[in-house]
Length: 483
Image (cartoon, rainbow, N blue to C red; front, top):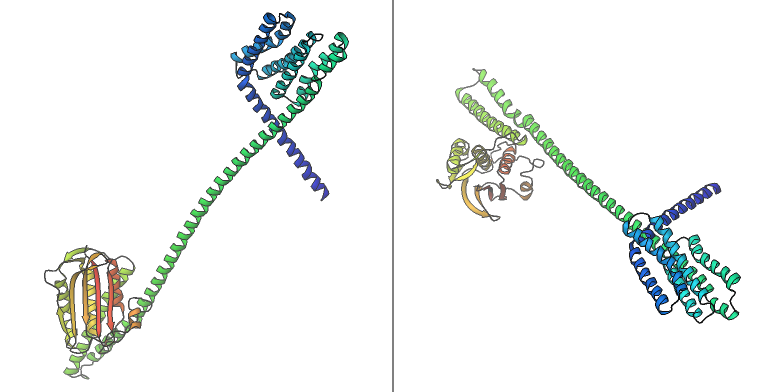
């Protein structure tokens, strides 16, 4: 455990040192850019100031020796300015060395001035000027600790040696000169503090920028991840909806299959069995008289008609379930179609003395699929006959109405039969709840006719609904779009 901790500590220290080195190098490059950016202005000001003092020393003070002390820094400044103007973005190291030499030359210039005025009244002003130059240099130096120490130490060392061994100042003169030494120390400290503060600010700013960049990258990655998650969520939701839809379709198909098999197993089997039994009786010629034979033939005829109607509905319903039925809406007169179906169902109604009333105007036109419309009308009227007592009435009507802000054609089939309760109404058009009830004369049924009506109305984007109460009859209403 201890060795692992030591390894981690060593790694962290090495990593930290690498980071420090990286920041130092980057900081040096930054200082170089700052140095080159302001160099022309600084050098130009330096030339102007030195030229002014040379003029002052030569013409006003008439001190040629003082002029000579200013020639070295002036020459170095001119050389550096010319080099920089010729090539602003090259020779950084050479320019840096010349600039350091200017620091040294300026200090030597001021120390030389102090030596020139060592024994006269110009000493104090010269010391003051020296302190000012040292202070300005302290604000400007942007070098490493060692080089900065050399910039301060070399000129003062040369000055001190000359002062001690050659000029030998008096105690009073030495006291005046002594002010320079603490200023050098303070200047060095201030410069180093400034340098470190600037480095820390640079490092903090760099780290802040890096952190900002990392944060932005992380934010962008998070946004991208969120977008991907949202897309995945939408895809998952769509897949879930599709699965649920497929499950509902499968459930509906299973219910349709069960209904289909139930009709085949029961509703088709019974009439065929009846036909089979009656045909066997007819084959026994001597067993039946003419009256019984006629009754058998009538029963066979009714069974065949019932089976034919059932097969028609069954085939239409199967095609609707498999989406293979052809939908071809056209404009036609519903009065004629209803009359055709009433003629076909007349015999069925006559047995129960049920009367028909077709109130659809002869010239009334609607837009629908003719074959589907005939199937809907046939099944609704057959259903009305089945559940209406003897001497009952059935009325068929059609009209234009306004429903849900749209014009629609309303087809109604109304009877005064036995009606239905709420429980029967709720499961009338659901295949899972659909059950057939015996008619008033015990007529058999499958419940398939109303399901087929619902399927065909849905294909038309229409609506089918029922109004009914027990003992008061029923009204089936079919709403067809106008176009």
